[in-house]
Length: 122
Length: 442
Image 1 (cartoon, rainbow over the protein chains, first blue to last red):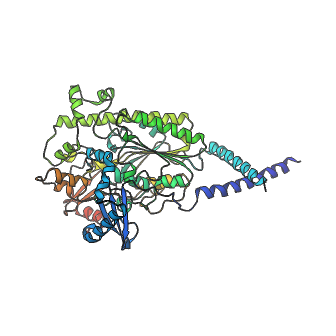
Image 2 (spheres, rainbow over the protein chains, first blue to last red):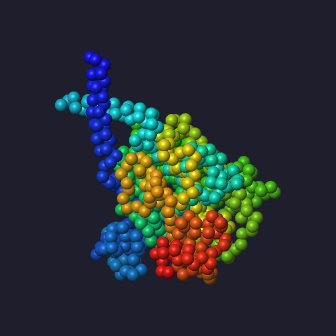
């Protein structure tokens, strides 16, 4: 086969390979914003009701209430102005988890709590 | 039909080899590795590669010759958890929600860098020496491997050497398995208490310092720091100067181990195919503004951090960038350099272009954890100084610090980097301009 023909064949093969590879690469790296399932944050207990999301964070004992009607990003803690909603959610969460008080969950995080105290966080 | 898998495999192999050939030719793999290394509690102005006059970071100074130094990198927070949340998401505190007084863990429905890279087929790992970079704060989300080194109470100190050994082995294994890696490391050395190796301490402490003074200086507690901050207890100028020296020695110690890690990646042939980002998460007070440690106040000492970025062809050549950049900008930059789709729901902007004109914002919510502790521990004391909410804006020249009680401070940072001369009353136009950026009433 003449050298030019060989070169054409090689170029064509290279194009096929590059196209196939580009397609497969695009499938891997340009996939839609599919995020792997977020593992649960240990010690974070949540309850949603009536358009609110109540969160209890056992390592710190922090509780927060977020108004989902203003969006799912929920970065404003409205517990102060909706204490009744928070209390309802807290009781519902305690019943669901079969605990008398959410604070009893903190005993599982003794090491973390000790560390946070040493750091001055608690 | 049975030929299909064989053809596919051949094509994939051919392509993979082709990729390597392309990469070696251009030095640019399509999907490079990532090393994101946080030097916890490191001040920008204490790194010699950023101009500090004591030789604290000789290894990084060498590395900087073939990287880009971002001289005015600012953190949005004065402590670890919110700063790392920003680094991992590209979002400011108001967006990611991990802010003292609002939420103690990362919002569950915001994407993290680790999730993004894991989804894209990378091997991802986190080696952390800081308790706040942990599952309980939502900051381990997405990492395929999470190594909580802080849990080992008997680990050797300094911990960077062993940390880097583990991390390098993991990166090498990922590479051998043919996968790109995303490697995050948190090194804790510059954090209180300051206990550098004796040889390193000897290089930095002033003549006449006794071994017992150095030993005593290690006896720092958060409560002691808080008493000093509140004016309830004084710390001698000699002790503060010694802390400053030991802090420098801790940086020197960490710098050496970072140099070892970089050399290893270079010898492995991995350095040029890796996006390397080395930076601080927040800074540290060493007595300035009558504060020590960190976690309160938004002065430059806690917000200005070092940052080096290296990726041949994009970030190299020893360039020094004087423009303001933010921790928020790191995530979108890494994602772009690695050819991934942009992260949604972020505040940061890639560092690959349009650098001038950025403004760095900082936040300390009112009645955060430090304030609560102060109120609990010292019920008779005036804790206003630590319980006020604070917001700040820095445009590269002026730094406005706005307190929730309505007071303001303004500093001309290039002229007054230690922020000693408050210009708020003398520069009302600048105050008004920066207040507008914070959406505060004029």
